[in-house]
Amino acid sequence: MTEIVQEMMSFEGIHPTSIKCMGMGIPGLLNPDEGLSIFSPNFPDWENIHVVNQMKGTFGFPVFIDNDVRVNMYGEWLFGAGAGCKNLVLITLGTGLGSGIIHDGKVLYGTTASAGEIGHMNMYREGRPCRCGSSGCLGRYVSGVGMVKTLTDKLEEGRSSILLQWVGHDRTAITARMISEAYDLGDSLAIEVMHETGKLLGFGLSNVINLLNPEVVIVGGGMSAAGDRLLNSVRETVGNHALKLSSSACRIEQAKLGGQAGVIGAAAYAIRKITS
Image 1: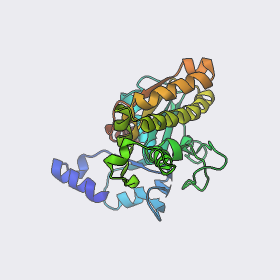
Image 2 (image 1 turned 90 degrees about the vertical axis):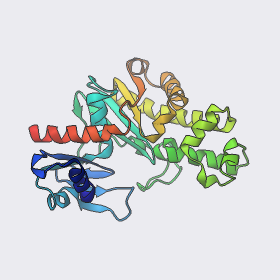
Image 3 (image 1 turned 90 degrees about the horizontal axis):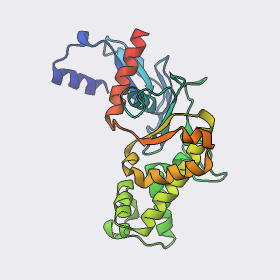
């Protein structure tokens, strides 16, 4: 990471003294005040890494870290789909389900800065094992990886799909994007899996809406590209199962800033830290 920042500075001709601060989004559980990354499910053997101290060894400007999804949320809250909202939830769907929460105009952190782990809500008493140590977590089903798993499980049961032809019967080559493409072509299994995934996400978000009463739930991450193919089932399920008063006041929207949300949000987070 230090090498990438140095390359960027060199490419842009930026001297370190002209940089006021740097914000970083780090996956997993962390202590943002200490600058410590405690655990990241994406990196094996990554435990208690003091990211800020490592950055300080190279750079003289202040460095701040927060969870990668929370900095995405900062971007969407300030400049994207959540602009002007005081109560919102952002989820990202990719390899898992990450989330961040704004409550009454403030970022919700909780006692250990791990509030809002919506992806680890237990949806099945005995379900798919999760890297968190539990099983049946929502993120194991509604993420891009989870949706592909749902589809390949059905293929192993003998179901048919155009996807098998596309990948030469190599199920490991199927991606979430392929499922969206097969959906558009009317593939019955792709449509079934997309709706099943959206329905389960809708049940999870019904709980979130009942608990937090947000103005908007923003869906980001790579799988958000599925758009209304996924979100129509989510909205329908929320409409049928969340409290009517809460759900009628909450819209479910696709993120607007895409991959730029984290960059914008990390910078905004760092600026707020040095000016607060």
